[in-house]
Image (cartoon, rainbow, N blue to C red; front, side, top):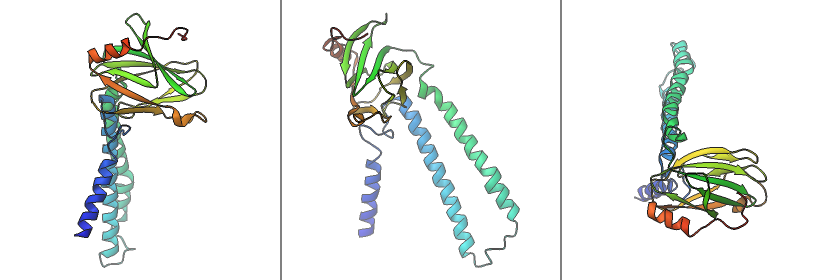
Length: 234
C-alpha cells in the first residue's frame, strides 16, 4: 500500500511540473501547442526507443545462452543501427515541418502589433495602431487581446536579450540595431509569465514580465489607462 501511495505521489508531482504560469507544457496558444506537441512526440519516441533497448538488453542477459554468440549479428546492426535511426529522425522532421506554420504564425493575418524593447533591466511595450503610431505604453506588463494574432517587433537598446513567453510560443533574441518579428496568439486564460531567456548581465534575474489576456473591450480599456509617456523615445 505504501508503495502505491508513493508512486501516486511521485506521478502527481511529475504532472504538476507540467503546469504553471511559465510552463511550455501548459500551452495557452497555437504556437505553444505545436511546440508542446513536438516535445511530447520526442518524449514518447525516446521512451519507446529506451524500452526497446532495455528489452533487448534483458533478452540478451536472461535468455540462458551464450550472449556473445549472435546467430545473425548483421540483422541487428543493419536494423538497429542503419534503418531505425533514419526512420525516427525522418518522422520527427516531417512532424516538425508540418507544425512550423503554427509555430511561426506566418500564414495567419495580424490583428495587432506591439513594439518590444528590451532594456537593462526592464521590458518596454508600445502598442501600435493601424498606421503604426504608438497609442499606449507599458513596462514589464504586457496586455494581449484574447484570440487575436499579435505581431511583436523585437529589439534591444544595450545588450542582447531574449523575448520568451513559454506558454505562448518560442523565444526570439532582442538585438540592438536589429528588429526581429514574432507572431503569437493567446487563447487561454490564467496567469502567464514571460522572461528574458538570454543571460544579459547582473539584472537578468529581474527581466521577467507579466502577460494579461483580456477580451477586446478589456484590452482597449487597459490600453486607455496606459498612454504613451511624454518624452518617451519612439
